[in-house]
Length: 196
Image (tube, rainbow, N blue to C red; front, side, top):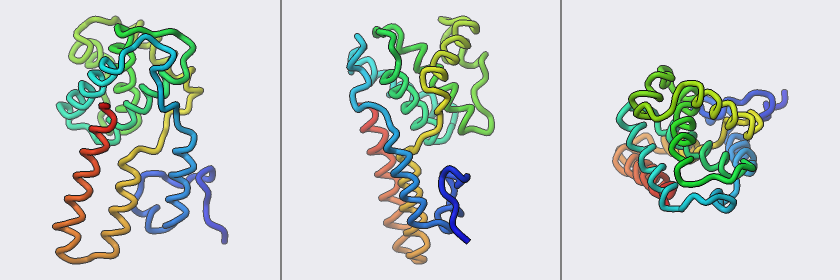
């Protein structure tokens, strides 16, 4: 019996998948990551790197306040950068606020059991700056620009892969004291790297 490929339905974010498929899982992550976005998402826009950095920092704050998953943050930043890389529109600094809000909204719908609702996004997070119809139009525009490809490999999935392998290898105090600290430092590094 042959093993499943990504296209046949390997769940990308599961420790059971890691245990079952091992190295194949890692290669699925690398293949999916290769479909990534440009490393210079701001190249065709008049959005300053400082403004993007502020947006990513604000996304960390919002997602932390709502106690959402780290994967929600990473997916939101991915959607933001991929949209900026792929859109044919010429965007400016003031456009990034709405785009960031919608990317967090979309990411929460994918990753969270209790995602943001449109009212939260409009009132609590968007401070009433955007009406619901504008937000819905922007969400559809982002989805269409990304060709409905909204799932990606996050840094957390690589960390979880390594974490699971190490957890299965070290059933002692070494894992609990050292490996957990490495995982937390890697997570912080990933967040800081996205800000810059």
